[in-house]
Length: 146
Image 1: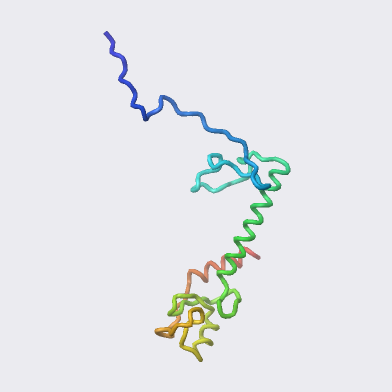
Image 2: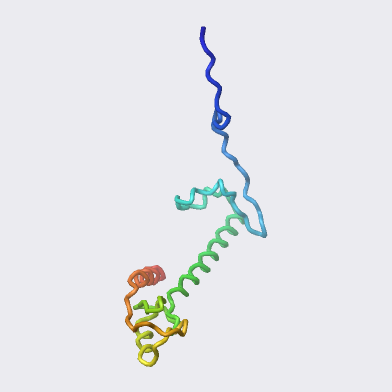
């Protein structure tokens, strides 16, 4: 006689459940897409087609994303500014306080002072170290704007 198959453990489903398909949700005048419809975090969004939005909803979503990108650009640009001159740096350097400044501005500061421009604490030394990473980020940002 043939034996019946062994019972399945409770935690393994017999078949894969169907994917959830919720419509976009309107919230405070914006349309948001449920998280399970968005691509995985490690996969970049290639187009807005996967959102299944049309007309005004699509226009609102694109406008909201454009505004969000402008705000991020403003934050990014501010991080490229020297705290002394408030100008975008071209030759950023680390000082002994751990902060980054434009080389010319920090050298000028150190000619008459021994303290940090940001913390006002005495600096243990006046050596400046190039911040190559930030310099390349600023160059990349400037090239993108052109």
